[in-house]
Every structure is written in structure tokens, then in C-alpha cells.
Image (cartoon, rainbow, N blue to C red; front, side):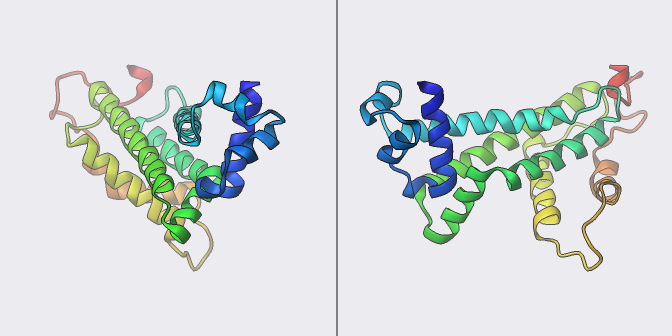
Length: 202
């Protein structure tokens, strides 16, 4: 029953947003009584938070699923950032929440999106810390770099209007490398002797 409730909630929040979703709607979609929902979730807010935690886990999975063992750390970072952008753009519930915030400014939807972005930034900062530990990323303000990377990729992939069509993956990586990699990469002699350059040589 809980799985049916969660699936119904996902459909409702994706179609109606936070503001337009009611427990009655979720009960109808799940084919259960409203009282049955309250046995698992005390309120719409609690159910929304539960669904949001699931989305956050999916975001992390999207990043990790495109990591290639043995590949250059920065190639993997670029690949992961693009996967995050695709996930955000394609996820029906997130798209509806963004639309709801723009149209109505719903506080709960805004808070949910802010919580998601905070989780993404925290995950990116920890991934950058992994790069520092590997000896490929120079020590830096990890939370700030994560913020700049996320904002840059959002702007390029969502807002930049290319006159000659969408940028290829290689063009995106060249942009990423030119703007960020040279500044982030730990150069020989800057760290401890023997620092590695790829995750394969971990």
C-alpha cells in the first residue's frame, strides 16, 4: 500500500504541483482511503518531504551513474554535472515545482527546490573534496566552487541561446576545461610528491 501511495503522490505533485495537490487526490490515485494515507504520512507536508528525499537520492544516483572508472577526474566531473542538469530538466515533479514557484511563489515549493539545490551543492562539494584527496584538485573553498560550477552549467545548458545549435559534449567539456579545470587542477610540485592524476591510479 505504501508503494501505491508514494506513486500516487509522485503523479499528483508532478501534475498539480504542491499547492494544487490534496490528500483526497492522492487517495483517489492510489485507490485507498485518505485515512490509510495518514497511517503512513501525518500530513501532505510530510509526504512531500518524503518524496523530496527520494528525488535527492535520485539526483546523486544520476551523478554517480555516469562516472567512468579510470577516466580523468575532471572528465567525470563534467559528465556528472551534465547528468545533474538533464535530471533536473527531465524530472516532471521538479519541472512542475519550478513552474509553480514562477507563477505563484508557493513557499513550500520554493523551500523544496532550495533544499534540493542545497543537497546538490553539498554533494558536489564532497565530490570536489574527493578530488583534493586524490591529489588532482588543489585545496580551495569547496562550497564556493561547487556553487559556481552549478550556476555556470545551469546558465550554459538552460539559458544560453546558441545561434548554431546545441553545444556538443566535447564543446561543453572544452568550455569547462578552459574556464575551470586549469584553475582547479593541482599542478606538479604544488602537493605531496607522487600525487596521482586519474582515479584509476588511486
